[in-house]
Image 1: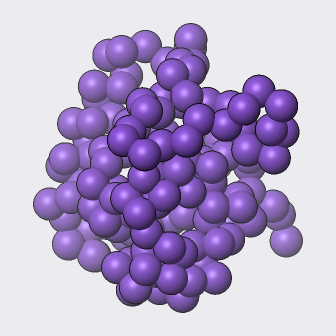
Image 2: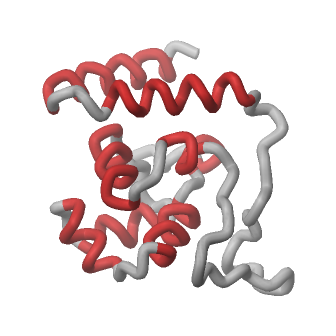
Length: 138
């Protein structure tokens, strides 16, 4: 069994930060996503990689776009506690950008996110399979 590619999908800390910014417990988020709270814990700890359906569901429930989730940018929100520089257990990511992600690519991700929200489950499964195929053939 292969483990998730953390270099591509190390977003658990963002899921946790957005959940906390929305004043939700793992159990509450799980209820809103129609999943088990252990699933939320696994996502937040990068033990599992979210599939496309979970990503869309997370974005809807947390009222964020996919580019906010995947771009390495997180803006401070009311009540957000910025981790101290000495806290190694919680990654320092506030106001940090990934230099190799151009703005045009972020805009394309946002456009795709809006289109994906309009698809039904069967269509989402097709898109998910297509993306998996593209990633395997890189």
